[in-house]
Image (cartoon, rainbow, N blue to C red; front, side, top):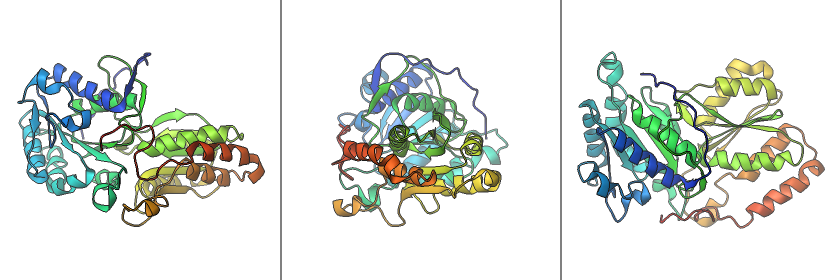
Length: 370
């Protein structure tokens, strides 16, 4: 694997963008900066514009750099790999992670291995953007969160942003990187907003990011579950429980040192993942902490994620399928042996805040067209 030079950390500015706007801006900046960058995918051209990811870029860069692809994921992944080998920097979109399964042969056997087989002489600077997450009954064939599958393949880098600023910085870093990067976006995050620094800057692909300091429990979250973890941590703080929240923004390369250092201080670990609990990223993190920091653990680690069954479409099943901020709250309260009366008021406030939140329809904050 090649290394990516560390860029200066951005200074947040006052402006606010949605995650999709931040991603669109990042792609625009990358294409403006480097003529080798081009975007390709189903629905890349208007009117869809990949739900906003390529909005207004066709007019600026033309059809040679904003490319509509046919419905052939395996072939188009191969085209993108070939273009990267020839010196271009493609950004390939599969609007469902499930669709990328048709291109795994190209991605796993060609893109991920070429730098290794060529002793670094043939890098593959490719970014594959995948959309995951629930909404409107995506179900078993369209709603899977497959990050653990991609992270299991040596030679790939895997990224999951959790807010607009990290989405922009991580995408720019991914496009710069000479290695193939799988960039996984949760659709519920696309239209949530937050502060995003202006200009061109990158957030290094160097592992987890610390989002909240704490002393009682370490919570590691991915993507949407990072947001749920932060909500739980805020509620727990009102009950006197201090949670350290770590964003597993870069799943591969897997660099657990920040997590290990945190657990050595807190003695307790929760991993809240958007994917399945069984054989998911949480399993890898818990195994690593158990191997390397077992003596620091005061309680057995907790994995939170989807249960071991296909993703349901029916609302009645979806309501019991997806973990929430309350799931994380309850797990942390148990780990610190908090008496029910100590956390009752904070839990009730969190429950009231999340009451009526649909399990599979778009989150109330989401304005996405899908």
